[in-house]
Image (cartoon, rainbow, N blue to C red; front, side, top):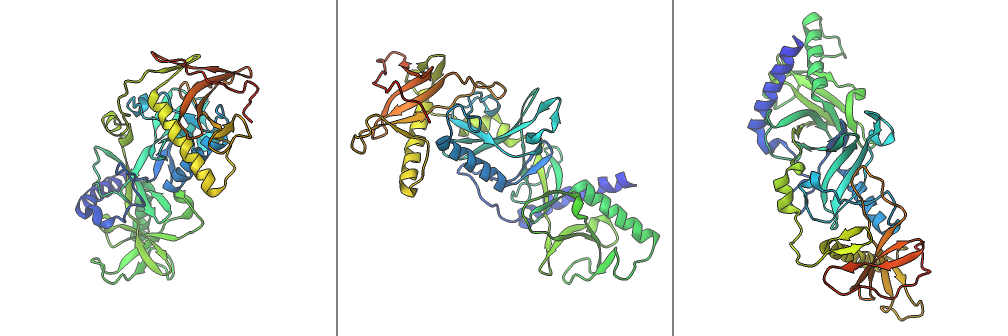
Length: 395
């Protein structure tokens, strides 16, 4: 009986979503310049809100200016195969999920990272496992007009303000309420409770509460009372919550079976850096693409402008050279963060730095090892060596 009701419930939902389309969905909280909604995600079965995504990007972005180049908090993403092999400069920072705190994943601690470009645009969220790297799946439905397709999507549940209920729990709640009606009478003040909803095409309906501990997700301090309502069949079922004595419908939400951000065609179209004829910069075991250096120059300049405007104390870009020099004459030091891949620990014995002049024009790339700086070479061009303070050590 339960399986039949659940199957009917899914068919009903599929039909309802195609009929209502985008009219039942609130507007999106925000979209990136690429038209992607910076919405919620599911990572390892855990719901991750768009606000957590944004906070994680902001924290990792700040770490570019405030941490040493070998700090594990923020990485440069070199292995971009999961993002279509893009040559766009990408960075990653941690995003909190339970796996970060020791939940087992085949004997390996699962780590989640938010990936963004040098303009702070969200690229995707990944979880790192012992046997590979996986995309988190985007939540669609509540802020996306796309219709539900059982071949493409997995139904997740219903979003009631800042709370989410699993669709299986909603369906089982209906079964429980229906059985209660079939087996006994309604008690005064009890449930299922008859409610009169003016304007409803079904007239008076039965209401049944959803239990708070059955939430998949709850973000923020606000709490609400959630219910299902129906008349005499599952075809009339809806989910709603009350706030200040007003009822609000909870829209259905779902995920893509295959994450949209893992589509190589999409990534190659939107995240492919311009072709460059410039030569690689070889730096004692590492090779840096010219566009990666150019992007880091932009970040360093933006960080300096932001620091000057808001009078902040940032670690980088770090002024170097003669402290008595007039403003704009000293060079600037900026770290080039590296990462072999998502599983390897970075080598801590060597660091790489970009050196810029007082106007934030390119001077050179240097490696730092054993308290000494060594100049890096560009293929087919002059040695980029410039005078460096050999006793300088990053703080």
